[in-house]
Every structure is written in C-alpha cells, then in structure tokens.
Amino acid sequence: MRGPRSPPVMNTEPTTPHAPTRRAFHQRIIYGLLSLIGAALGVPALAYLFVPSRRAEDTTWSEAGDLSALPAGQPSEVVIYRKRIDSWKITMERATAWIVRKNDGQAIAFAPQCTHLGCGYHWDSEKQKFACPCHQSFFSLDGDVLAGPAPRPLDRYETRVVGTRLWLGAIRGSPPEETP
Image 1 (cartoon, rainbow, N blue to C red):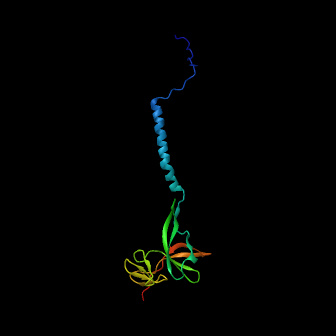
Image 2 (cartoon, rainbow, N blue to C red):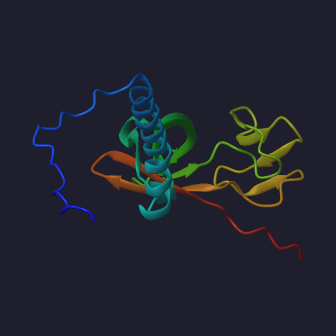
Image 3 (spheres, one colour):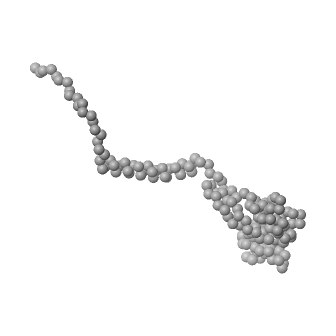
C-alpha cells in the first residue's frame, strides 16, 4: 500500500519579472514604428473621408483701386490679387482686368482674355477699340464684338463701388451673339 499523499510544495519565493530579451526589445521597436506609420497614413485618410472640404471657389471680392484715379471713358489695365480657395488650400493669384470708368461714377471691368481662344488683348488708342493680336478680333469700349472670329462680347467682372474704391467679383461670361 501506499502511504498518504503529501500536499504539493508551493513555492513561496517572490517571482521576478523576466528581463527583456533582445528579441522582445526589437519587436517593440518594430511594432511602435509600424503604429507610427499607420497613424501617419491613416489620420489624413480619415480626415479626407470624414472632414467636409471646402469647394473650390473664386467668388471673393478683390480691390481694384481708386476709381477716381482712372480717366473717364478710357480703358486702364489694372493688377488685382484674388484669393482662391481649393479644398484645403488657399492661394493668392495675380490677375489683371481692363477697367473703363463711366461718367456716372460706375465702371465696367473686363477679363483680360479674348473670347475666341483666350489670347490677351490690348487697347488700341489710335483705333479706339480693343484688339486681339492672335486672330484679329476687335471689341468696342463696351466689350461688344466689332470684327473677327470672337463668338461673343468680352467677359466681365462683377463690379461694386464703395466710396471711391472699386471692387471686382467673379467673372461672368456673356452669351453668344445671335446672328440674324
């Protein structure tokens, strides 16, 4: 026969944590770097998906200068700076406009491109008309087509006069002229 069983011996010594091995140390570094890379790629992707972006807009008003400094009835080319908002990017663009000050204190502002193929035109003071050098389109002081292949009058900026300061808004195209 067997004798009575003795109870198992319990180890009463405190357990010491294992010292990290070189392998565990390198694994932690690799996992940490992978987490950083994942966050660097994931945060912008999540922002793109869930944060509403601003739509491209170019409708802010830009100051074109003192209207009283421009000669009445004569076109003047002025430089303006427009703020363009495109999703998360905001840029300042340099642009030009042809401005004709009327005698009543108002103004007409034309976009600087010909409506035929987008060439830059100029004011011919000798002929008293706008002339496009690319394909010989000519426009009146009001922007109407006088001759050439241009299909419609010059595009205009929206204008607003505050005191003596002229402000330009968005470019508004004009409809094609109808032929009789």
